[in-house]
Length: 95
Image (cartoon, rainbow, N blue to C red; front, side, top):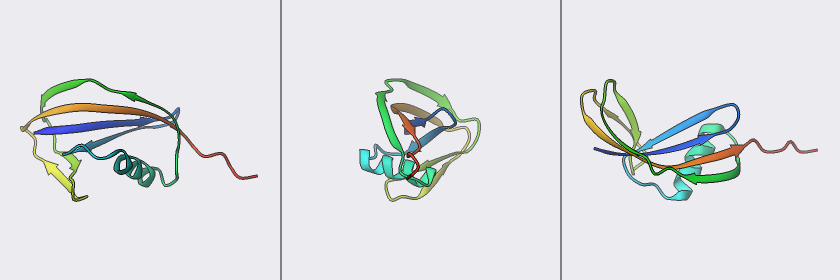
């Protein structure tokens, strides 16, 4: 099974998003915003050209194209395709 992996991080946290499909840029940024609870400031976006094949040792949760969470059982072979790494910051407080 193919899994598309997206990374987002700042100096405090690192988030990994797993999808069973390639989401649009807008979909990914919406998921990032929902996870953080605020609109992040995007400093930079880097391509992540890595790829790896693994046999799952534990259950894996991924997001599907209809917005649902899919649980992939342990023991299944998956192929990770890394897509991007987003460096973000918190919005500046209003004065």
